[in-house]
Image (spheres, rainbow, N blue to C red):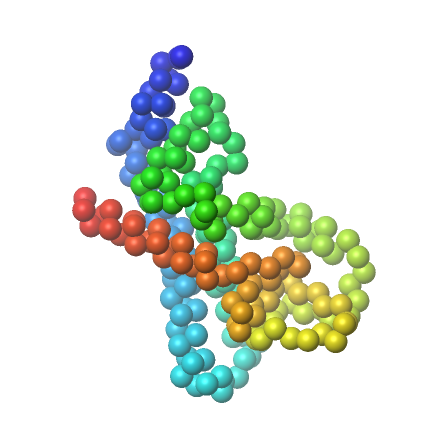
Length: 200
């Protein structure tokens, strides 16, 4: 075993003074996601208080969908710290991930591990190419939609981005993701981060 590999094993992929760099990277994505989560929580509170009596303008739809995409994009970014795509030389990335998972009390049941979500967002340009060239776009074509799940009466529907409020599902390019489990995990990471910082 090389000296470097031995040190990686000994320190679990992160030398103690370097943990702060990983924590700062995680903080950035965590706080960016939480800002959008807070906005959506205020929106949901407003919908409840008004019993749905408000105008869903194009601008409001765009803002809501932007915040949802921001949450999912930062969830995908955080996922890479805990579930790297490659183990790395001398298992460096894998060891680092294991150390961070222990630090944040995460396991492989986490919704953040969803590789499908990561691939969808990280390669969005390629996925958009494939989606638009895979079949003729006939029927309903909606660049943005926020509202309840609707009955399309059998007519094909193509959605660039959609959020079904009644079931908490975000859809993009035909892929659907349940938002609440991801939000719950992001909140858990944010709380753990704050808890760790309060004890330093």
